[in-house]
Length: 517
Image (cartoon, rainbow, N blue to C red):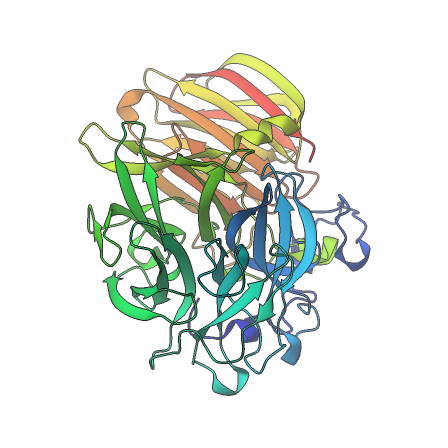
């Protein structure tokens, strides 16, 4: 996000913003104080903020057998005005499906520097910062109210296992060198060289910094990418493929819409020597091709004993878009605005040509929350086939196979008369997710159908689609391409249909699963 401060964006924009999006027939009671009651449009199995507002996820860290998930939270979203702005709120989880709210961890407006934006937390096991072995140290962007457009990085620390944080003075650990965009520090430990490394978003550059103690930082270089907007929320990690090859990945949240690219998480595979990132290719790949998978973070996968799996990362993103961040029916129906994607497992894979890419799938722990399974087997379709199933939150999987066909897919959240639905499937040489026939946050009409490449010669497509009350996430084939987008179908629109275009197809092993979390 650029051009206007986050505090301004969050000031007084919520109340009544989306009344027109609500179904007259939804009759959902508004929960008191934004509680987690299963009313209205609150997601059934996605993480949602208990009340008010959330946006950027902060990279979860592992402490005492739990993932600690911090996120930007504005308790004054409905009030707005000078109180607007974000703190870090904490939720913990052992399986990344079910979360327990722990309240505010890093408060806002406790210093003249104002509210707290995105950053990252680390466990300082070696006591490099001097707060004690095992202290949790967070570096986050703040922009003093009296000095707008002077973003800098400030330090907070916790000695109670990451539950509450104290500011380390009001002087920045990394001052602004005189640039407007200077935010979202991502800190990792470089064990090989015995130091900390920070990746920082600086307009169209990701800057790299070194530190011995987390308190003072030295600039050592940067990676520049033009043409995909202002870079935000950088990510830097190492991952090992199934063939044993290890790669470094540099990721950013970016806006490629002007050039027909996504507005989500761009990434490059390559090498990193502790100072310089060298990409395998100049152009990025994208971890999601939908309209609403932004400010994503990846983090280590650990087993119950805390051991790291070098072959897998987890990922989570904010299911929203700054172009229409305040347009959601959950504001009026449920007293909140803030939903995340499901947590994914991300793995590194290679193509036949030797190129590498990241593949995604929903975290396997989701299987433990299946409350109902509907197995429909193999279904032949030529045109449109309405199924004898209704639901507003579920997962559907199938393999579509054909001999000669233009396109095929599913109509999700279909109205009784068939006039409203969200379409997901493949057409000729691309996979697509189209929300234009259902209520959705894009009133401009520009961002309705997302595309990703598809090999039509395969004559088959494996789809795994997660549907919830305000979102659809489609994983295509091995998960190299994913589409995540908001959609706000009327709650009475609960049908499901299969369709083909220009021929016949068989939808094999079609399974619907519902979840109780």
